[in-house]
Amino acid sequence: MKDELYLGFDFSTQQVKVIAIDKRLNIVYEDGVKFDTDLPEFKTRGGVHVHEDNLTVTAPTVMWVKAMDLLLDKMKLANFSFKDVIALSGSGQQHGSVYWKQGACGVLKNLKPSLPLHEQLKDYFSIADSPIWMDSSTSAQCRHLEDTVGGAQILADITGSKAYERFTGNQIAKVYQCNRTAYEATERISLVSSFGASLFLGDYASIDESDGSGMNLMDLYRRVWSEQCLQACAPDLGKKLGQIVPSRQCVGFVSHYYVEAFGFSSECRVISFTGDNPASLAGMRLCDGDISVSLGTSDTLFLWLRDPKPALEGHIFVNPVQSTDYMALLCFKNGSLTRERIRDHCAEGSWDRFAEMLAQASPGNDGNIGIYFDVQEITPNTVGVHRFNSEDEKVSQFESAVEVRAVIEGQFLAKRVHAENLGYDIGSKSRVLATGGASMNKAILQVLADIFAAVVYVQDVANSACLGCAYRAKHALTEVPFSEVVRDAPEFVCAAKPNPDTFETYNKLAARYKHLEGLISIAKV
Ligand SMILES: O=C(CO)[C@@H](O)[C@H](O)CF
Figure (tube, rainbow, N blue to C red):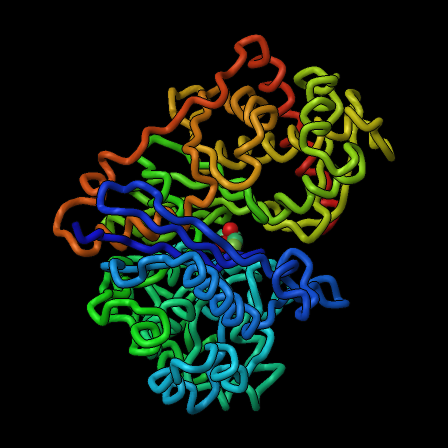
């Protein structure tokens, strides 16, 4: 019987990943290409280049293209049945931007199946190194944008967020101001998500409503570009960005390149790509009332919203699977790379040893609190590593087991405190759905359950963004609600139940964390 497959790709910070599902939602293929190890010629660390100013962070655009070449070749070598793919979609790290040079569209439309993508596209990016979400170099552009529209809260009311350094409008403004020639040589500006869709479409793919919400440029409610925001960032920007489309839009069929080079059906549909976090919301089949914690390069916390209240903290995006609804997101830049640094320094690079040490120190860490912002943090906007003893006195170091517990408790206390700022009720019986690399670590999830006083669930797929895109590809070909399409997906598994004996300890620690984080933020300012 002819199979019916759906593909979900994810252009994330550290790798390009893919998941294939069949019509019963079973995962039938999963793979990835890691930038640092599979493409060492680009000399990235964690998939990125941190520049000397320690604020500018980019990734080579053509590295992402070459990773896609390698991934498709791996699938071909594995005899993946491309001909059975009915539809594909994907996601990309949010906020990053790709600058296509004049003439690039012609090359995209006429890709030669005998050559790899990267060889044909490598000369068609007007900016070779894409700014990405870890960049913090555009504070001046953020202030200008907020001043232009009348202030931070007005910008949040228009776009869903106050101005953030990583948001694409501010990044484009910096390109226009600092690299005018390149900006003027740019025919199209894509997000990483719509760039991925363009590779498959063989044409420029439109930006979707959900990922477009993360640019400080889109009117959140009207779903069109805000003219005043566009003009505040750069001239002729609307033309370079193209139109916005719904996140479930079929943007066309795969280009002849994939039909001839890999055996895709010419009837294989390309469904709009979206941001990695909106895609994770889909992959985790979030329901109203759930809270999701994605523990990846960045840690993100997001929830489904019907009635958004844009604020001066966090973000509101259009919901990727129900366009009348929204999603709230908090992003913590110091995520897995910080945990890995302390694992390497304190636990000989071993997660098993890390888990053993986590168990050596008791919940609450005898009142010791660590705040580890190795790089400029987003939530809140400050940087530095700070350790405090039970008397709130700064100390210069912790012994290893305390340091291990402090980094995990500190990161999760931050998530709880900022979620409560957004109105999340810790006492509610919400489910915490965990995903991302660290969600495979039970010891870490037990701390999450205790701090949130909630049961933590996982699904046996860490790549929720890829899975979400495969689900979205299937959903786009139907007229039923997304929840109907994923109804028979494998249930989430309880990974950790909160220990009630820790509730009082963490209530007190959360209050102290909030106070101490406030102190270090003011000190930074
Ligand atoms: O900036 C973020 C969300 O606003 C990050 O989670 C990126 O999407 C990670 F790729």
